Every structure is written in C-alpha cells, then in structure tokens.
Length: 167
Length: 56
Image: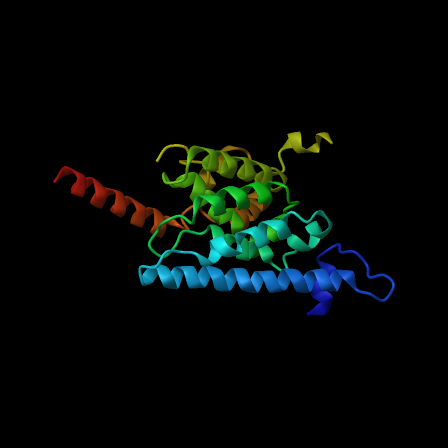
C-alpha cells in the first residue's frame, strides 16, 4: 500500500527528522473526515426538514486550508483525496437542492487555484459535479461560468489537443 | 437544457478527433454527464410543483 502511495505521486521529502509533510497530510485527512461528516449531517438534517448548517459552519476552515499554498500538492493528492470531500460539499443534497451559494462560490474559487491532475479528478469524482453545475439550471450565472472555466482548465491536459504543447 | 448537449457525449469527443485513450481518460474524470441526473430530475419536479402552485 505504501509503495503504491509513494510511487504515484511526486511529494516533498522529509527533512530534519520532523516530518512536516506527514503533519500536513494528517491535517488534510482530518479535514477530509470532518467535511465528509458535515456533508452527511446536512443530508440527514435535510431529510428531517432542518436547515443545512454543518457544511456552512465548516466552510471558512475548508477555504483557509485550500488556500494554503505550501500544501498544494497534498491538497490535490489522489491518495489523501481531499477533493472527494470538496465534491461532497458541492454535490446536490438528497432533495436535489444545491448547497448554499457561499459554498459554491468559495469552493469554485479555491478549486481554480489548485493544480488538479487527472488522477485527482478520477479519484475524487469532482469533475462529475462540475458537469452537474454546467447542466443544471439552478446555479447562478457566475457559478455556471466558474464551472465552465474549471471544466476547460481540467479537460485541456486530458484531451491532449495540439495547442497544449505550446509551452 | 442548452449548453451541454454534445459536450459530454462520446460521439462528440470522437467528432472532435480524440483518440480512444483520451476518451477513456475523459470519461474516468468527468463521467458521462448523467451522474447527477437524479438531482436535475428532482429540481425539475420541484420547479413544476412551484409553477402549479403559482397558477392556483
């Protein structure tokens, strides 16, 4: 398991005996758990007719973590799969309704700054949610535009069009 | 629902001159565009219900 984990990713090496990378990974894993729990709690609450507050409450911490430049590689690491929890935040609730507008706007903005890879997309399924935002009529226009921009950014390396080799 | 038709379709990708591997990667990353159709159906149902209520 560990061999696989190390192979597929280009991660920073540990230094001075203090494994900062491991600490960062643990922080991200912890957040992934909390996000997953919050998404579940909101869905269960919605079934009981309660307002969805768990994700909203956690959102500032999520955004702060996603904006940590030094953690970028770990944030998109398919093995840690924080992006899957981001997907849980953006998914429609059980009744088909969208998450709060702030969640949509802030997470789309944060996603645009992350170096998301094909493996990250496949592991997280976040591209499928982007497709949903493009397809549904519910999202605000600016959100739909953000979704389209992410889609374009993320498809470019996959589709390997000739104009990608300009660099 | 304008805008998306043909976008996610495999035939659309083939028409765009993509090789098979790229198509496979695309589908693995973005699905076939129908993963959340259950939610879209619920949204449409809710809209129709709302419209019906508005007319009464």
